[in-house]
Every structure is written in structure tokens, then in C-alpha cells.
Image (cartoon, rainbow, N blue to C red; front, top):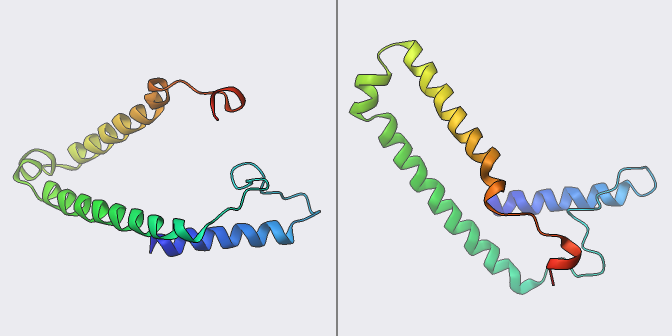
Amino acid sequence: LGFLCSFTSYFVTLLCKYFSSGSGFHTEGMFDTGNIEQWQLMEIPNFMLLGLIMGAFGAAFNVANVKFVNSTYRKKLIRVNRHRQLLELALVAFVLSSAWFFLPALSPCLRKDSEFP
């Protein structure tokens, strides 16, 4: 499904680029590769393999999440009342958003013109 979604988004991007020439909507930047050929046939099996691996990780995450949600720990401590559930939700949201906020500090930004080949 992810493979289909990525090709659909790529196709929509190409359609927008085709129909927007001269209209002010341009897809330069992230999708613009200049004169480099964008896809080669030998790359597609790698993307399919990556999709299979990520799908397996997603399925494993779902199984672990269901086991965690139905654990006795959560039944005894969290599901006791609505306030504890909201507190858990707020705590998880705070921890995850803080992690994503401070994640770029672990690796400095690189200048594209001087530090990439």
C-alpha cells in the first residue's frame, strides 16, 4: 500500500508540475532534481524491499501496542478514571514532541554546497 501511495504522490506531483507551468505554482526544491534522471528501473526492487521491511516493523509495532494497551499495568493504574487517561495522553504527547523538537540538536546542519559531494 505504501508503494502505491508513493507512486500516486509522485504522479500527482508530475501532474501539478505539468499543469502549473506559467501559473505560479512550481514544485521546485524537494522534487526538482535538475537534469538527473529521477528513477531507474534497478531502484524499484530496493523500494519494494524497503516497503516490505517497514510494513513488517509497522505490524510488529501494532502487535506490541495492542499488548501494551491491554496489559494489567494499564488496567490497574491508568484506566481507573478519565483524568489518569488524559494525563497519560498529555505526558506521551509532551515526551514525543520534546524528542522531535530536540532531535536536530544531535546532528549539526551541513551546508549543501560545501560539505556534500
